[in-house]
Image 1 (cartoon, rainbow, N blue to C red):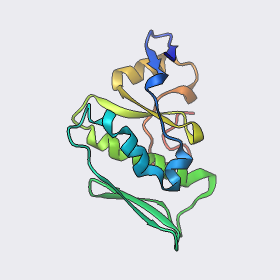
Image 2: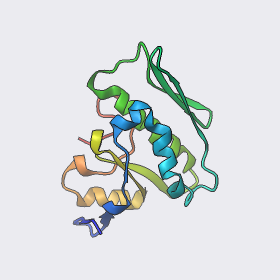
Image 3: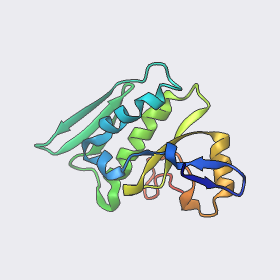
Length: 155
């Protein structure tokens, strides 16, 4: 078991971390990643919402839709410097999972970012304890946002 003991006494079990890789998400991999975590999501949501991908290789563009909300990951006119499509893909996946968890005590928190991105279902209390115990903010679990340049990642 891959545990990291925090000073606050909480053990984050990295064996439970779902590997996601922001680059893979941005390269038309959001539905595949979502399908891979659906079984875990079913612990908290009886009927996970379907995810639809809209891919147009001719433009090129990649959009995803879940729960009636559509997210543009990349398309002409969207900035894509500094890995912004990676950040938009990360935000979209975490947003539509966490929107479904509103009636639960759990959220899908991001761990790390970029190619090392993972997700972990935690309660707010577990997240807060991890933050108190982890000395480097960059190691803290976080909820991705759509705000450039950090997208919710503590720094």
